[in-house]
Image 1 (cartoon, rainbow over the protein chains, first blue to last red):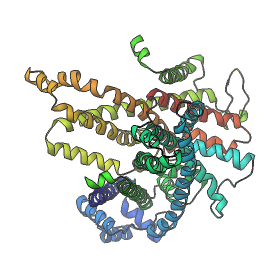
Image 2 (image 1 turned 180 degrees about the vertical axis):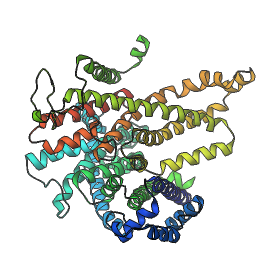
Image 3 (image 1 turned 30 degrees about the vertical axis):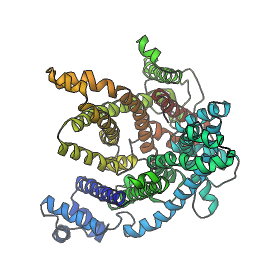
Image 4 (image 1 turned 180 degrees about the horizontal axis):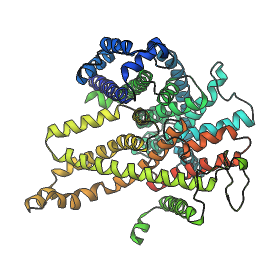
Length: 311
Length: 265
C-alpha cells in the first residue's frame, strides 16, 4: 500500500513538472515582448510606455538568464502560486475551485450512471456468452465506441433536447442540466466496460472453482455471491484505471459541448484564448484528478485482492 | 497478399474493406473534378444535391463532397504520420530499453511514465496551445502521446526474450543486432504492434477531430472533420443532412480502424 502511494506521489510530481515546463516554454514563445504585454495588462493599453515596460522587466526579472526564470517559474508552481487569468483577471486558484466542483459532480454522476448501465448489461451478456443478446450487444458497443464522445453528445442533444424536448440543451443551473452530459459520458464509458464485465463474467462462471461451488450444492445466487462477485470485480476495477483516460478526455469534450462550466471547458477555452496561467492551472487539475483517481483504483484493487497483500 | 487476407478474421476484413473504400473515394473524388473544398458560393448556401455538388453544399455554399474528401485525406495522412513515427520511435526505444544497461532502461521508463502521467488529450491541447492551428504541433502532440504504448508493450515482450536461449545462441554465432531484431524480436512483437497501430490510428483521428471540435486544432477554412461538425451544428435544423455527413465519415473511419484492430476488449 505504501509503495502504491509513493509511486503515485512521484507521478504527481512528474506531472506537475512536465505541465510547468511546457507552459513555461509556451509563455516564452508567445509573440511580442513579454514586458510590454504584462504592462499592457496591468496599466491598460494606453498607459504602456517604455518606462513602464522596463519597470515591469526589472520587477519580474525578465532580464535574468533563462534558467533563473525557469527555476523561478517552477518555484512558484511548487508553492501553488498559479497567478491570475490573462482574460478574466481573477486568480486561477479561485476559478479552479469553482470549476472543479462542477467537474466532480459531472464525473461522479457519469461514473455512477455508467455503472448502472454497464453492470447489468455486462453480467447479462456474460451469463449468456455467444448467444444472440451477446452478439447484438457486441455490435452496439462497437458502434458506440467508434463515436467520438462529442458525436454521441450531439446525437443526445438532437434526440432528447431538440426532438423530444425532455431535457435542456446546455446550462448548469438545475439538476436537469446534468442529465444529458452525464448520460453521454456514461454511455461512452459503458460501451467498453460492459465488454470487460462480460469477458470477466464469462471467464469466472466457466472456471473450475465456480463449477465446484455449484457441484457442492450451492444455489446459483450463493455461488455467484461467494465465488463470483469478487473474482469478476477484480479485472473490472483494474480496467477502470485504463478507462480513466477516456473519462478525463470525455469530460473535456462533453463540458465544451454542453457548456458545462468545469475544468475541461476551462482548458479548451484557455487554449483558444492563449490564456497561459489558466492553461497551466486547468491542465494541472486534469492531471491531478487523473493521478488521484488512479490511486483510488489501485487501492481498491489492493483491498479486493487478498493475494496482493500477502506478496 | 492472399496469405495476409486469410489470416484476418471476418471483422478485420470488413474493417480493411471499409478503410480501403474510404481511401479510394477520398483520392478519386478530386479526379472527377470535385477538387475545390474552400471555394465559397454564398448565394448557394445549403444548395440541394445536384450533379455539380453530389452531396449538397455547406453554410458557405462550399461543395461538401470535395470538403469531405479533403478531410478524409487529411485525417488519414495525419494518422499515418502519427502512427508511423510513434511506432518507429516506440519500438526503437522499447528494444533499446530492454537490451541495454539498467540505468538506460530506468531512464527511458521514467520518461515514458512522465508522459503517461497526463491524459493524452490534455497533452495534445497543451502542445497545440504553443502554436494554435499548426499541423506540426498537432502531429507532435499526438505522436508524443502514442509512442508510449509501443514502448511499454515492446519493452515488456523483449525483456524476457533478450536472455532467452535462442538469442544467446544467435549471438554466440556472431549475428549482428539487426539480424537478431529481424529474426527473433520482430516476429514476437509484430502482431501486438499492428494491433496497437490500428487502435493508434483511430485514436489520432479522434484526437484531431476533438481538437478541431473545441476550436483548439486546425483553423478554418481547413476541411477537417471536427471543425466541419462544429461549424455545421448551428444549422442542424435547416440542414440536418449536411451535418450528418461529417459525423458519418468520422464514425466510419474510426469503426474501420477498430474493426481492423480486432476484438481484444
